Image 1 (cartoon, rainbow, N blue to C red):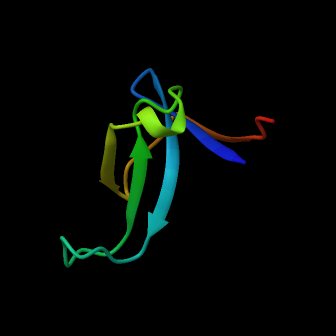
Image 2: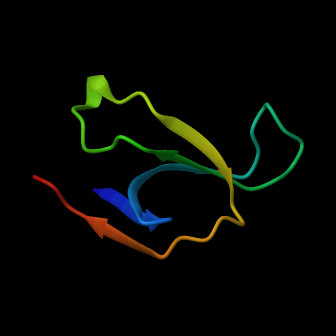
Length: 64
């Protein structure tokens, strides 16, 4: 299952949600993949965003 969200007019994949990360003392983070449409081994644009980030919409998709 893949969770896709729209943020600033661009589609991104929500990869992981974490309460704590090692690089910050702030709680609540979301990891997104900016180039999610590529094959798994070619994905390279990952970003951690604060959980306060607003998405236009979030949907679950089952690609099989």
